Amino acid sequence: MSTPRDVITSYKDAPTRTVDVGGATYAYRELGPRGGIPVVFFVHLAATLDNWDPRIIDPIAAGRHVIAFDNRGVGASTGKVPDSVEAMAEDAYAFVTALGFDEIDVFSFSLGGFIAQALVMEHPELVRKLVLTGTGPKGGRDIDKVVATTYRDIVRAALTRSDPKEFLFFHRDATGKAAARAFIDRLDERATDRDAPLEISAFRTQLKAIKKWGRSSPDDLSAITQPTLIANGDNDRMVPSILSEDLHRRIANSELIIYPDSGHGAIFQFHEKFVPVAVEFLAR
Image 1: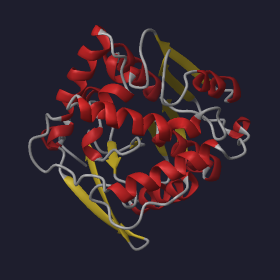
Image 2: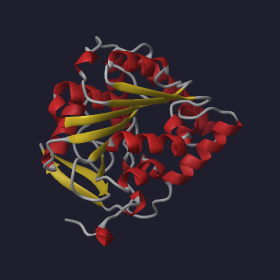
Image 3: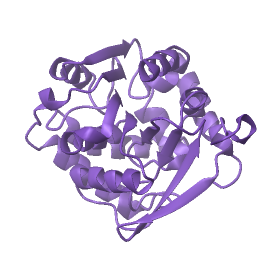
């Protein structure tokens, strides 16, 4: 059992660890007090361990054991990125169970939310609570257009020497631009032991999986009985905001938050409002 001085509560200070399972080595970081049900973070398209906002993770880790990980073929994790969301979910299941957990809470964003849904559909006994942010259901309208939107904004970012997330996650008005810059600065707070960047081939495979998810037949989300918190901005260009409302309608035991004048990265722009809600939901 950890003593108070052993507990790491700042994500920038969490060491990167590895675990071998199924022929792959998974990289992960953990922080917060050990014991109880951990909160496992499922990250977004093109992201590695270094893409989690510390203003989201740190407050949750103040009272909970938090684990963030690179899925197969992402960042410092070895192996090949699967070309389907369902296969990514099976890899996540292998990772979690390799750490010895038989029950977790899930915090997910964007692609991570697709993976989280696939995980809970296939392994409902593993998940106690579910947080779905900036995401949508399998077969959701216009999810397959993420590919075109992503490439377009990568070009826009390159022309202005910006991070693509500034375009993909935030409005390009004064408020959105300020929120974007603050978010990008927070991602750079970790000075050492940075994660390996995502390879281009892995990124393209993730996009292929997203397109397949968007064009697949919908799942019966009435099967999800876990308490679920859903959040997004009111104008998400990547995963349309209406799909968050669709999730809310189809998952009976769910709560929905839509933040005004914001996009895909609304939980990062409104972290001061969102985090207390998420902490209360997970502790409830």
